[in-house]
Length: 215
Image (cartoon, rainbow, N blue to C red; front, side, top):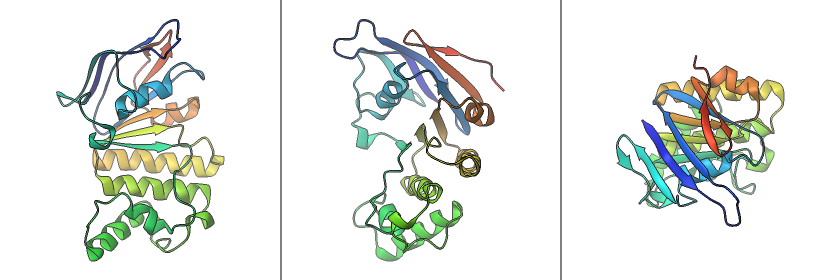
């Protein structure tokens, strides 16, 4: 389990800070809601290691993540913008998620398998700038498969997609979370995304997480 226990942070010049406590379980999606500026991105940055907490605990299966640098944490992140290099092919973008020195045959096989799993077996040589928004998000999801990390952070990943693509992409996220037993934390201001995906949800009020009804 991923556990935040009174994990605190205060931005410079901020009158009051944040204190986050929550538990997220494997194979489930935990949603975080709240208006702009409420601290949703701050929470993700603390889990990812981009911000250092002032106090409290952050553990995965009992192991503290706080001493670990961002690149050492067992965490993948998918943003609203899919973070692909437009001039590279889908396959070359995905290869960036593999360790340097991975043999070419193994690299090609793993990339092909991941793209097949997200329903895009034929785009490996296609330039990223020719892909649709939904395809780009699927390639970014496929890259998380290569990294094989147990925690997936989603920061408004469906906001830039049209309704039909949003529905199919969030269904894929739910499927992959269950299949790979990921601990998935979703930040979204779309109540329908939360209702469709979350096994449990929290909202941020006054810098703290308030648990909402569970499914």
